[in-house]
Length: 180
Image 1 (cartoon, rainbow, N blue to C red):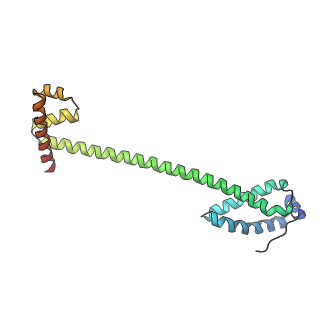
Image 2: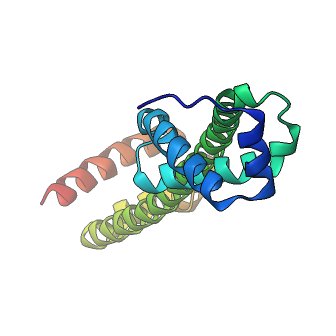
Image 3: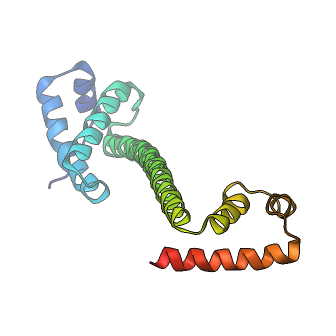
């Protein structure tokens, strides 16, 4: 690509909206921006979006350019600013997507936990229904109804030392019934 020497007359014609000068400007910088943006952005759509935004900002701010020889750095400066904004916007949307994904994962995880918990409850109820009534009632009172050991002792008419023996036997029967 051949470098073009910009002068005050060229910039004046751009400001006045000369079609031929604007077409030359767009073609010249389209290639330069493509070379730069190809390394920085991964999609053609993103490259086109950034390039169009750079052109729009340059044309809007041409009146602030005081040295026509610096038109190239003027355009590339806008390119750098637009790129930084693009990265910021993309990182925010990535964070949002990740947060949304985490929320979806948490929701999915909560649903799975609920299903597993419900399946476990159903399995425990089924095992308890196949056990001797005294053992099943003892396990229900202590673990499902979360009664205190003193309350369970009063309910079953036993002391705490014997409750420990009954509980051990009930747990063993539960394991045996569950494994069948």
